[in-house]
Image (cartoon, rainbow, N blue to C red; front, side, top):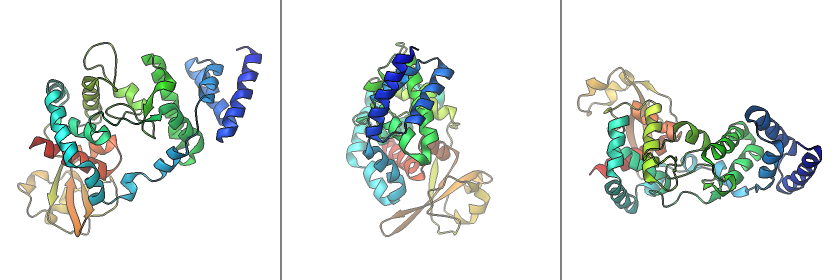
Length: 318
């Protein structure tokens, strides 16, 4: 790269990032790494990042996610409303051929895929208005608790944009950089997004078919077990049940005495399960999550999220 061009780019970037409180040495290090590993022009990376805007709202949102501050009763009220259920049934009717293909090819129930899209984006109606470049740059360089993770996602964004021939500064998504109907972060897009309608593009923004297939592929690759249980509600208050939003599992044998009213409870012995104690108005609900429940937590590492998807999927079946 022409040294004069680099000096000018660095100077411009320094002024721009200084105004936004970005750490310039970190930006230059990031550009160096991308150049060395993936043959990007350093000036191209710096120029792209110089156009990014620091967004305090991104820091504010990621510091207090709903899964961490809401009870199950509050969380459920947001995601299991009548409009989401009614629109979900319309979405399933309109996209049933692709949903059935996911069932056949990946073993994922159609209502599970529909519920994920419903919880994530209200079936594509709210896919996020944050510029993804801004969000990931802000989190990569100004959110120390997870800066390593988001620097990796920023790297993946550059690669995704190049591979898919997308304008990197034209992509919008969530405050955490998730995109499309299913809210894939860049690394998930590159690994799990598929061209389910065979038109030559992986378009998770405008083509429900690709989003449906990609979600099915994601769950399949994370170990979804065909025709197995997700979760069951139990009548108990055993001490082993905890309000912690933990995804740690335990042996179902330890819960055997707690599950007196579960039909065919012997069939679930010796499995690893998740005991769930969920706060609702007036008390608690007690649930046991199985393997497929834990797979849902791979999509979003929260028991509340997985339970919202499961319960919406159950409602969509009726």
